[in-house]
Image (cartoon, rainbow, N blue to C red; front, side, top):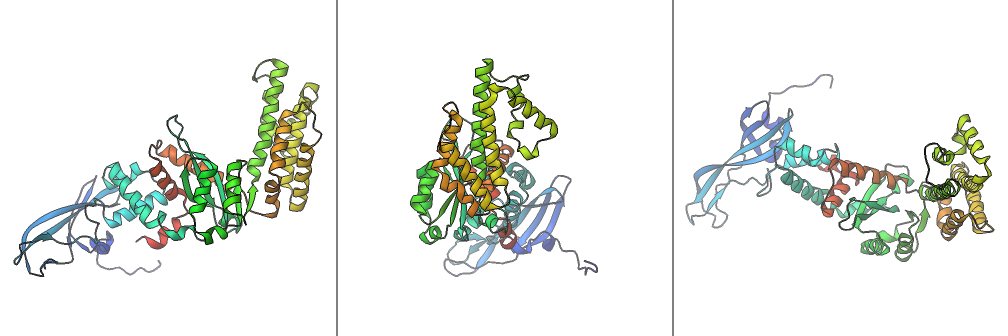
Length: 436
């Protein structure tokens, strides 16, 4: 602002107390906290039972945590008059529902700030509770309840989805209970190049029935609007999608196809390692030293790495590794080909070659060939559906891993799902438009 227009300082406006129907009448500020004394703007001196007039009986103070100012926890001390009806004897106090719901410990503005800090700034609940000067449980319960009311329970948040991704996610690394959840991602913004992917929903467990029941619970017109479902090689997700979304196209994304080929390469490398040395890989073993280089695209290898690979395959004992490596490189090159039709043709050639006339000893390639042959339609569908990949799903899984690390783990899966939705549900634009 080049030429600002100044007005008389007003603590009520500065601290956004006017939105709570309060007026600031005093302050107490130290280096560690700030207390603002307030009074309601409404008198409310009539009885709602009989309509009689009320006389002032006494004054009480309601304390509310408020959004922090100057890195100090700010508390509102609201001085409330209590009235007694001269007709029926009923006692009541001034209404403060504009400032906070009944029995709440955080003001509405403070709760808006807390939800914004969690969703937009990615603060932990512990940090938010410290800035509000309330307990962790008070902050967590209030934020999750407001997040569900304002964001998660919004029925329109599923609207506009036409491309979705499904994957599994490990929500805890303990032996007690089910450690997996099924994650549903909206990939429509990626396919339309309008923005990042967003987390749609999570369900406990990983099975065909979990995904099937979730799809069945969605409205029919929503299911009819789904064109593509991106997934990994798990057949349960495939079957559930076929049964509940008969018009959708299932796509096995490049990430998991390349991973299957990479796993086959690792398996044959370990097997040959055992057969030639009698032990697992050690630092000086040539196969072990080349384990990462083998997973690098051939066009990205340095001159030194190319010489290393050539020297490795000069040993006839490693022929099976060389053949598997060549197949892995062919699959990678098919996805890297600029012309999608050419890439589809290359990958189809690889799948057909793996399905026929493989030597008996190449057990890893035979297993890979059976998988790719069975899911050939889903694998090749990627080339006719540009922008369809479960890569953004894996990216969101990584963000959820970070969330779990920041929170030092979760014990309650309901809270975990709610926190994940607030973390990665794409609610930032909603917050900017809806919150005060």
